[in-house]
Image 1 (cartoon, rainbow, N blue to C red):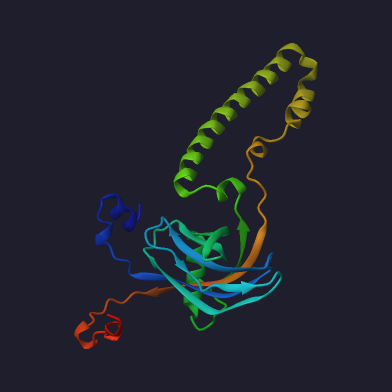
Image 2 (cartoon, rainbow, N blue to C red; image 1 turned 30 degrees about the vertical axis):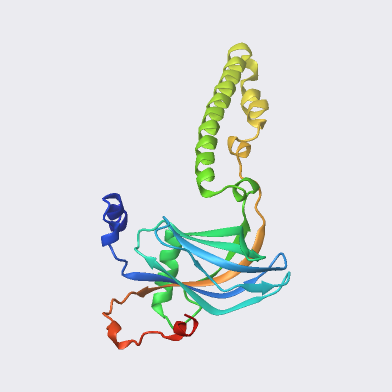
Amino acid sequence: MGGARLARAAGLDRLVKPTQMLVFTFWTATSVKRAMAFHLRVYTEPRDSATKSTRTHHAARGAIVDFGGEQLELDWMGDERGVVVELMQYVNGRSKLLGEVRIDHQQIYTLTREAAVDDSDLRRGARAFFISSLPADRAKLDPVKDFFAKQVRNAVGEREDLARLRDENEHLRTLLDHDPTRHEGALTGAFFARPPLSSYYAEPRRSTLLKVAIRLHLLAKSFEQVDVSKFASSSFHEDYM
């Protein structure tokens, strides 16, 4: 268990300050599948702080969107499981989640090490990521309902797997016990002709919504003491009091 997770488990997470920031540099979005206004939202897993969002961008289908090197920063402890980049469609003042890409810890480690070799080479630490749509059932669930739904699906799935395995074992045992001449056929024919177990519970096919070029690098956080007395108080609001 990493230092940050240990601190969270002990209830001391507020005393642990991140010493680094994970910086996202957004370059372009291509292969846009639909015309839309959108922004990208990022957060770490576990989600220990607020999400960050890019500006809203407008794209026609098939267009190339230039982010102009827009950057977002997230606190980085170093023991996170990864980050999530979500595609949010902006319609009538509301944002709707369309899809996501998840970048795991090992990928982040590889890209940030690559970027650190030569920080002036903007190609280092950059990759094109495919943002895919969400399964229909997940897109309709809020986080709380999603959590309980996953627990139910896992429990039901395990019971169905065990029941199916028992049935197949019984079927095979019957063939071997009552028809020895068909042993080879039983192993190569009807029994193994059934679809593999994983196909029964495979995720629905997800479509690619767009491809986004992102650079990841780490930046050390500085903790400077700022003398707030040097700043004048705002008086603009007084005209409206």
